[in-house]
Length: 301
Ligand SMILES: Cc1cc2nc3c(=O)[nH]c(=O)nc-3n(C[C@H](O)[C@H](O)[C@H](O)COP(=O)(O)OP(=O)(O)OC[C@H]3O[C@@H](n4cnc5c(N)ncnc54)[C@H](O)[C@@H]3O)c2cc1C
Image (cartoon, rainbow, N blue to C red; front, side, top):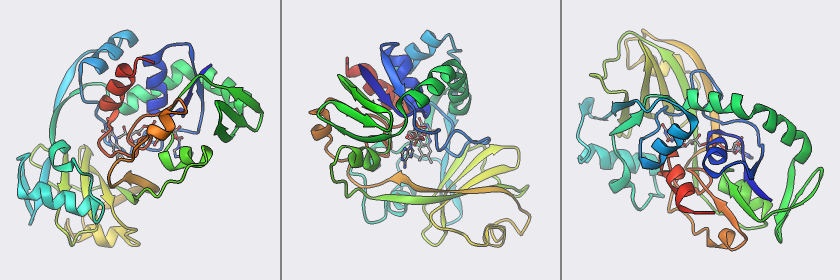
């Protein structure tokens, strides 16, 4: 039997990409796309593999152009190659940089017009009975060794596994050590009439003194601040930037939200026929959904 570990957006997309001979072992929900509005950015970059997947699902192939900006010293900068970009990378990755960040970080791209949130909920609807059934059937995983997944309901032999679980969690099940660095994130959903992003959908904030690294415009006068620490009094702190004309609509905390540092070598897992996929699965900040779907297609499992 082949298994997909995880029932977030990537687990469900893996099921579409790999086919019905793959069985999902569910693990809760997508941490970023279960909420409305979603916490994560909401764009699937288009490539030939995502286009194939969308056509298999019978979804629209419409695309949209997305562009962001960097903020530096209070100015918006729309260039992909700029001092502001390097400042931003230093701020986000702190002492543990991703070696390809300067090459891979982009602020403009062509994306599918269907959002990740919408895609996730359409796929949940499609697979909901399998997820419910498998949740009961497989229970919770205890460990994975010698091609056997041991769970609270029994032992299941596997041929191959695709794992979308955060890599430290998978390593724990496989009795492997991790030592991986990540950053916790605090997200604040606010409304204010006073921000002007000059049509950018998001702003990456390299300015070191500020406690947020990114602000995403999710609708008219609505923004999500991605913060590097608990603001304790978010209305007061964020209000300083908008003349106190701000309402807090919601907030949440996600531990280990951003994987940082050099993506680890995962060949030890692959030797066990376990293939981690995704930003958290591979502990690689730049494995967005489009890159992860490409990896799934290229693996030819
Ligand atoms: C802030 C942010 C914005 C992003 N924006 C985009 C974007 O716009 N476009 C894009 O293509 N990619 C984006 N990514 C990268 C990636 O696509 C998303 O992180 C995506 O949510 C990963 O898929 P998921 O929902 O399956 O993952 P997750 O929800 O992170 O987890 C996968 C599975 O593991 C389970 N799980 C999570 N934590 C644990 C735990 N501690 N123990 C056990 N199980 C756990 C979940 O329930 C789920 O079943 C973003 C990432 C971040 C951090």
